Image (cartoon, rainbow, N blue to C red):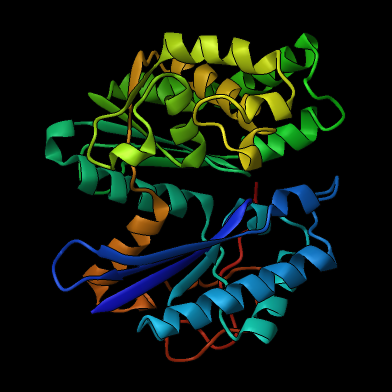
Length: 340
């Protein structure tokens, strides 16, 4: 069985094709197309026509590539940059018309659940009670649990690109007062979630996402060329020093630091502030970096269910886009969650 997933995120459209004859999807092909959608978001969070057109073209190209690799119907989804946009419905409709795919907008809590599933499979049961932190471009997902799926999962509007746009748009580097303002904002939004994580007292805390991987590299973790099986951790104290380092540098200089890519250099400071504040509030000293995240979670669910039809839009959603019959979706309605 060959399966695939197309992930339209804040910075790239990524394709992963995997063989899934066993219980673990083994990647056979990956590719990415850089879009940097977060840079085209206006003050209200809306994506303009140019960005939507480029997104549709990238998804269409990724789908054609997936078919060349033997995947007829990859699971195609977009993250918070599209999900939270006021024109999300129009974006999904345009992608459907131009790329002939259903662009799924999973609720943030479902993204957190799928990421937890992937992290649990990677870490194994020896991790014990486990928390997962995932900083994306538009949202910050937190999940915690003792089993295969989390007992608690939440998504907060604390993504690295979102906070950079809201607080640092006119400053590079931002003044100390703005960095403090971001930290206060994050503390306020995370207060209740952090209390829940402290109460759960996870044995292991795992971080995923490209933002977390780059911050871990900046904090001294081995580089990616050493492979996915090399243990990687990140300490709260090292991350505190990384915040101090990043806040003094413009984006062009941050891109010269270990692990920080030019595409994510501008948002790296906001991501570091979120990560450090979360670890401090949750009383977490060290986190483990996991190479698997939501894409792998989707592949795992697809393997378990035997098709991409495991995700069906909940009834009663207020927004809808055209769907594709035969994939487990209502032909008229497809899930769109516009709540923050």
